[in-house]
Image (cartoon, rainbow, N blue to C red):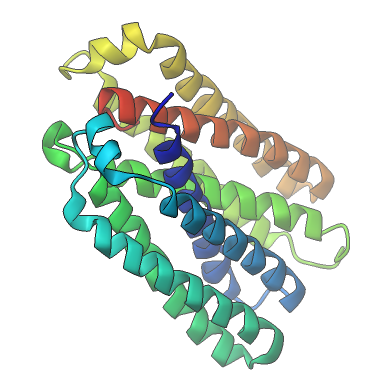
Length: 270
């Protein structure tokens, strides 16, 4: 499938932006140690670097033929901010290891702003003209929120194995954000794939297998697992919570990949 480079690139962007955003927002409560912050921060940096490599291999002239909705006016913007983001992520990780709490948080906010601008540029680049071009950005940000919360939550769940005294509150909060992100995606599917939408027939018939993979594997199944995680968090059953989030991560990633395939083939953002 010729659109796979675009699918890979946009998915990588969603992963590192969402993961880093959840990390920074969670850090403000001061509940997490530097070891965890460094682990997730380096993970975000590694994924961002992979996204940078992926971007360098995309021929946007060819991409415009595959997906006529590309607005190349945003190409330079995404390129610039992705490079700035990489630099700021490096600075953040250095501050985690060597800087004060204040320096770490300031560098984290700066890097988070760059991350959000990068994701915004990508969302605008691929927004197309579907429903006026206003819906696709919501799809990217909700997807980033879902992937970021479940990945950070899963990593945090593993951290309880080495830090058993850590309060369950941050994991419970992250899981709630994950649950709400999935609900937002469910609403987006209803809005974009209902019978009142012109392209819905192409999605529900020609791309029916992909559509139901997106809905059942990428949204419904993770919703069930997120609800189960809520219950295990109340019981402080961290191993069970981690297991649920581990499985949910696979479903969400599969759902996001399928969602981008549908976007680049039908122009419908799910």
